Image (tube, rainbow, N blue to C red; front, side, top):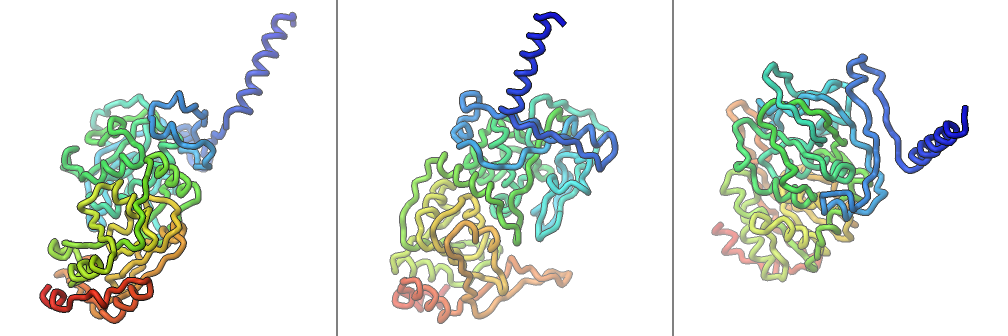
Length: 402
């Protein structure tokens, strides 16, 4: 070997050694499946970008080093529109046609400690080829609480690792882009996902590169991982959140009974009395998402009437505050596992005397649509323990006439 070849070989060896030390090579073929599966699924080669290389200006500001799981990469994977909605209109099928659906927990959608999703159905239709790198964002369900609690929480980790990729979502069949609820776009904005990166799947696709990160939280019993809370703390910082300081905030569920969606009789009397006692009343339906987050973040005592708004607190990370939830259904402790790591104290109070549950013609109880009735003694004593003079400001006439 001559001197020139030796020098070239040394240079290449040096470069490879440098690359190995500079980048995290974490690729792995799944050898539990067949050869076709092994070729289609690998863990992404993680080559970190510098902030100046990232087009997404939101995530370019994120601090490096948060230990998020590497996205799982699928190549040449089919992605199809939704055809069916189920689980009381909180789940739809469609999305990626996962090659190892039954055995890969990372791609699955969990609820109540078990998977509830259905794999996408392959199609014989012509497939539109997508060559740009993409992320699986999830399902767009017309329900704020479910979107936050289970459907959109893959985004922070995915965008932290792949801030400039397109993000694919499925919607219920027949729903057009302009019919998607405004709170979906607000949550996407909060998570730093530019709208020009969002793609709604309306026809079958063949995606060259699609990545997915684990579902960070699921309904009921899923405690959020540390890295997810770290990311949410970053999301609040990058959004320049300015907490609105209040001793006590009550997040009401005003108007839901009139819509047949369940609630507590007499809540209007409660909100009026709390307001006279100096408590800030927040109706989430009348405030922007960022304003809600600012009020949540600044409350020393954050009180919720049990409902979907509770899940809004999951858009924030760790805050030194007490969260108190007025349960409207017996044995309900909504979001306990998700909220406990986010606050310094969490309490549930069942301040009701009776609960009426509508019953379907099939005999099934419709607990989410039930009507509860306050136990005033428990209600008054609960707020008195927290320094709120509710009893002294209670208007019995208004309560009886509602």
